[in-house]
Each structure stands twice: as C-alpha cells, then as structure tokens.
Amino acid sequence: MTGPALTLGFETSCDETSVSVVRNGREVLSSVVSSQIALHEKYGGVVPEIAARRHIECVGDLTKEALFSAGCGLQDIDAVAATNGPGLAGALLVGLSFAKALAYSLDVPLAGVNHIEAHVCANYLNGGLEPPFLCLVASGGHTSLISVKNYDEYETVGTTRDDAAGEAFDKAARTLGLPYPGGPAIDEASKGGDDFAVKFPRARFNEGSELDFSFSGLKTAVLQYVVGAPEGAVNVSDVAASFQRSVVDALVINAMKACEKTGTSIVALAGGVASNGALRRVMGRECERRGYSFNAPPPEYCTDNAAMVACRGYYALLSEPGGSGYGVNIFSTGKK
Ligand code: KG4
Ligand code: ZN
Image (cartoon, rainbow, N blue to C red; front, side, top):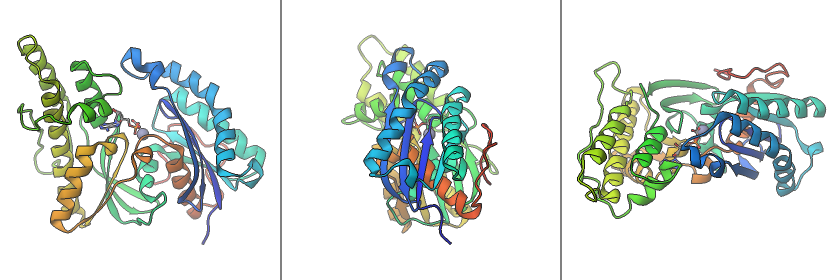
C-alpha cells in the first residue's frame, strides 16, 4: 500500500511556525521553521495571544518558502497534514484553518495530527526505524513514555504528575538567571560543571506508578538552593549540571523500566528535551550496556517542526486514505 507521495505539513501548536514537504512519509524535501523566541523572551515564557498573531503573519510566506526549497509547487501536493492538538488553542487554529482551506482548494485529503504522536514520528525522518519500540517524548509541555506498537497505535505507559521536563529546565534556568528557553541554556552552562556538586532529589513512585515522573520538587530544590546560598557562592555551571543530571537520571531510569515492562529493546527519544546532550549521552550509554538499540532524531527534528507532522499525517492517511475530513476539530487527540 502506498500513501500520498508528497505531504505538506503544518505545525503551529506553540511558538514555532513550521511548514514542510515530505516525500513518501520519510524523506524530508524541505522543513522551514520560524521561531518566536525573540518575541516571548522578555516574558520568560510563551504568550498565547502573541504566538497566534505571529503564526498568522508567517504561515503564508513560510508555505511558499517550503514549496520553493522542496522544488515543487502546490499542484504537486498530494495531501496536507496539520497539528490539531494538544497545544495553544489560538495558535493551533491558525495552522489548522490554513491547512484546511489549502486541502479544500487543492481537493486533497487532510490529516489532523496529534502533536505528541508527531514528535514520535521524528524518529522516522530520513531514517529506517520501524515500530514497535519505546519512545520517551520530553518537551516543554509533555513528558511521556510511549509504547509505540505500530504506526497508528500509541500507548502511554508513564507520564509526569506535574511539570514537564522542558518546563523544569525553563524554570530552573530562570532561577539561575539564564536566558529563555532554559533547556539549551542549561545544556550549555552545564558544560564544565560537576554533575554531583549539588545533591538534588530524584522523585520515585510506588509500584504501579513507577513509570511516572515528577519534576516540581526538583524545581523547588533548585530555587531553595539558590536563595539559601551566600551571595556569590552559587556556581552556575555546577548547579546546572547537577539539576540536569537529576532530570536525565529520572528519564533514563524510567525508560529502562518501561522497556522491561513492555518487553522491548529499542529506545527512541523525541521532543525538545531530546536535543539535550547529557540525555542523549546517558540514554545511549545505558542502552549500549544492555544491548538495546537507541535512536535519537537530529536536534532540528526534536524541537517543534512540520516534517514530523507531515510524517505522522502520511501514516494516518495510509490507514485512512480519506483523511480526517475538512471538519477536523482542534483539541482532537488524533487517531488512536
Ligand atoms: O518540543 P518542543 O520544541 O516544544 C513543545 O512541544 O513543548 O520543546 C521545547 C522545550 C523547552 O522547554 C526547551 O527548554 C526544551 O524543549 N529544550 C531543551 C533543549 N532544547 C530545547 N531542554 C534541554 N536541553 C536542550 N538542549
Ligand atoms: Zn512539541
């Protein structure tokens, strides 16, 4: 069975506007991303209203750019895919409405795509990974261990009880006076720092919930450490490295437990936090030690992008060639 040869993907769930053309679900012909970091930086986080308005300004030109860099035109597009949740309502509406109108005018199928499933699909881009496998999706809004059974079946086996891992990075960075977004800033600041200089907590849950995460206690511990330290005594590199190690340990330990529980020996990473150097290193090492295989997308496909959305849409259209229909809603959790 073959799906649409060329899928045009849209991602506008948060603060990145992205458009991409993907051939046969996996070969990325173009992926253009316009980041809004500079607009939100001064607020220390994403302002939903500003995000939605910026998507409106960008989406048309980015579509032209994505088609141009892919060397094709609208007439070559066989299907359209757009994120329809979870995400910021106003931001989602821009990409989804644009995609709907485009699919309608081209008379091609439209796939409404779940953002988290799209992150998982980043592992298929320009590569050969196939399900089943265990995927850790760690981003600014989500931290989940997902048992990927096939291209359409995703079972969440562990999730965060409070903050997402990326959110914890952003908040800890703020406490340390590092710029937004905090993940890349902590990744950088931790270089040369001692992972074990400060003893930060690692949350654990009882049997039955042992695959879940909690990062809010860690966030508070960083704040208490910084506030309680004598002036000038905080070594930012050491605190960044120790905090990062605490997050990474929790993610790796639970991912290994999830492999045992689900009986898989293939581990994949996804989401913005998956571009973290320490997480990639420690998870890779642990997989190697156990004889597991390990896959991590290149950093540009870990953070939000439309290529992963086009890929998820391609596989959805393989099993449902008519697509989601033009009435596809936002907040849909996607095809399960
Ligand atoms: O997947 P993503 O681009 O957007 C969401 O779906 O949330 O993830 C953004 C999150 C932010 O919290 C950011 O601080 C974090 O990913 N992040 C990182 C790194 N790069 C981005 N966290 C740790 N280390 C990084 N290198
Ligand atoms: Zn994301």
